[in-house]
Length: 91
Length: 336
Image 1 (cartoon, one colour):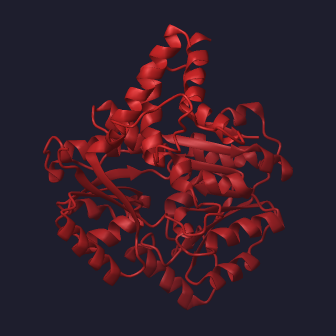
Image 2 (cartoon, rainbow over the protein chains, first blue to last red):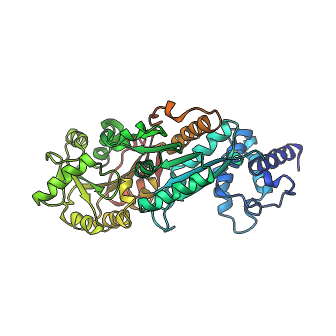
Image 3 (tube, each protein chain N blue to C red):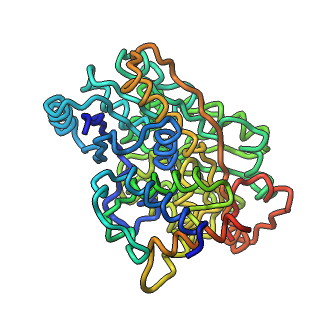
């Protein structure tokens, strides 16, 4: 993973922990799915706002959710979100 | 962790049937998205809230029990999507601050905000708020439009007492279901003026049981006609589905106000407030009260922050409506 992607990952994990303080001591890896973290729909909305605020208008969290909805497996993983943000911030 | 703000959302629009056209109207209109966004932007967040959603119960007795429970829990703020819930809650809740967002056609029911623990956002009902860019769009979409039928639910708080008096008087005359816009018994005369300007006839149909609405629809002259629904109809179980089914079966264009999720099924267009913007205002007011200690009785009623119009182009075309690019561009969202 590039330095930029690592920085994106760390910011997203930081946002996840801000949204849900109970996850402070929970290990979150690339393969971790947001659904495994028991984030309810309201917290997903909040995470989305933080991600968009952190990474700029080119990032649409709703678009990522739609993308993940279409997956049959490994949906809503941190890796997928990091890749999504990485591509969106470079286009 | 510091103590959380105990907030309860009381809504009549939490629907049991997940397959109903309007079951996800809150998600679709995104007021919650706006609310959460506002919290984040004001350096707060859901972690500071004990936020729970409850459906407005059918009876006032149940509502009293809910409010009693809220007092026991130390609830600090209630949020009510919709005038119907707000009026009903305000009758039994005089102490817990309440923020609501809801419509007051022709200013009916606005005395609600005189109650010291109540403030809110007044929604405009865009279709009947103005002619240009709103009501006029009905005629742009349907140049041959001759009559519009508005169904109104008598079992909701939108049947305001002064309007109900007129309806009761009309019913005693036994002149049918639909009240003509020129009748002295019409509930919302402002809509008559909009219709006259568009060159169409306006007919208002207050109904109680759904069987009355069924009968009324059978009486309607559907030639070059359109149906219009409001969310008071969502409060009558089955009524919204009836209008959708009737629209589909008889190929009568259906329009709605404040519910794009209905239009996504078989409606042609929806004229909504911008609920995401409404949610942002609610978030700001909530923090003003809870975090910044602003007394709710110092917060005046807020104006509607804006409108969103949704066009179901697919349905429009299926009905044979030829939608020009200029008309299409007047809609915020176009479903294809």
